Amino acid sequence: EKPYACDHCDYRASRLVHLNRHIMTHTDEKPYACPICTYKAIIPGELKCHMRTHSAEKPYACPTCDYRATVKRLLERHMMSHAGEKPHVCPSCDYRAKLPGELKRHMMTHTGEKPYAC
Image (cartoon, rainbow, N blue to C red):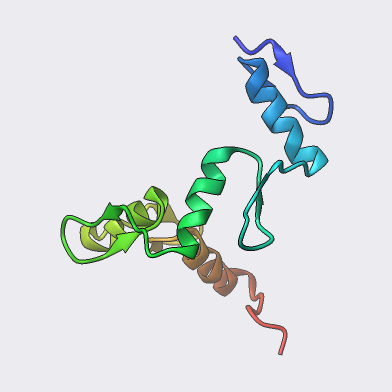
């Protein structure tokens, strides 16, 4: 059950704290500021991950090779290169891609859209 509703969009939350955090996406409120650069975050965990970009800390290690990542999401994306996974499927043909950006670029072959303006 999600009793808390956003006044700005269709988002609903099961907890008030989640709704309050979501509302910050509409107000562009980001109370957690990086002391080194201009980056700001909505939640402390995002700032913690960002701070790793200013240091050599890369706590997420690939068990197959020497690759290390600052955030878990990047390691998961890297791991697909070892598994050969291609979860992003073209709806118009049999093409499959590892990353959403690769699929988007491929889709331009069906639409005739050019990837660059020049």
